[in-house]
Length: 263
Image 1 (tube, rainbow, N blue to C red):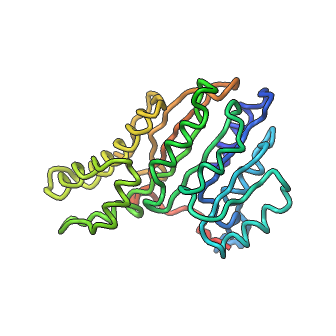
Image 2 (cartoon, rainbow, N blue to C red):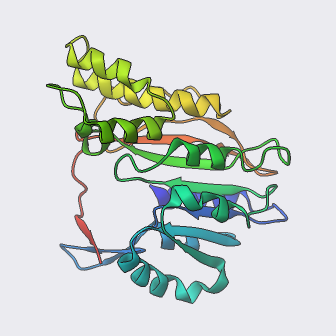
């Protein structure tokens, strides 16, 4: 999926004089290995660096784990100064990651948290990177984990612990998620309905940042490998393309045909 987005974005930016740039703020190890075939499967960092034509001018990567950083750094070494790695909390370092990126160049941001670790302030910072310099925004592809991510932090019996509640409020940028949660606890809505409302609430935040939705529905109402809330606009001087696309991962999704493990 990411490969398709990246290649499409690169091709749409073909005629831009500044080229294009990418952010991958939860980069991981850069490579996966199939458990069944042993084949190497590029991770998000390598996908961003390999996407063409043309190649990205710079790809900003961030990873929290020092152990993972060693593997990631080794794998991006062949790409030279096109890749830059930041170590630590992406939410704290997002300003440093954005600073070198031209505010008038097309930029693609990939945000794929495993749970609630993506702070709304980070989404806002990316969305506002071009303010005052361009009428367009950074394109964001956000994978929003629901059941296997933040929903499991919300017990039906009893209240969520204070730490979990704070994480969710940080993820949304507000505590309006509590209204959905209370309706789910009281049995007024089903798990599927709650999931849809959680995703739609997040999508509304993107709309408030200026990412205009297209005609597609939220999509969390039906099981699929990925459900989405897309929004559309244009990249700077490029062919019209999707922007602010939200994908919600759910436990209803079928298992991937090729199980992989990070190497």
